[in-house]
Length: 189
Image (cartoon, rainbow, N blue to C red; front, side, top):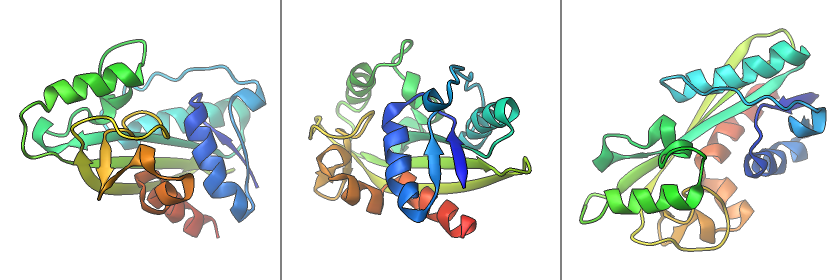
């Protein structure tokens, strides 16, 4: 089955393809399909934003579409940056600035508990939306660690390792997106 990924984020495309293509699905990025839209993510929840993106691609193509909306929810910051994770430090999106702003916000904070959340909206070939939510508990580190990953990966600690210190397989096994993808894969079987 062919699925179009409703994202312009090359890192998300790489992760989603790495997890779903071995299961027999052919995934295409927007770029591979010649789609250059950027959907405004103005929803109040991960579910709303994922739906907005998947629905836009489905409406344009009539093909099955998949969108992920994800973010880091920090307990001490009342769930921030949450749905605003990508733009936490303002426009244009900048991972380094987001991480620096988060470190400043967490300066002197003892409770560093956080969750990465991923909601996948899959719109099937008939246009029906299906949602899959994955969460990964962890903590905000005191400094960036590791050279891999993207976004808040260098700051998000699961045990002794940051997401950015994990291999792709290690991250997929524990991550929020990995958990959501496994739920989606179970549904698609």
